[in-house]
Length: 29
Image (cartoon, rainbow, N blue to C red):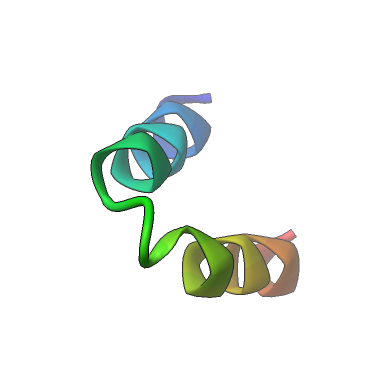
């Protein structure tokens, strides 16, 4: 759960890098 929260925070922090982050998150899952 901690990892998910960190990823979500990064997404909110970097709107431009939200798309790539989402892609990485899917790969991790």
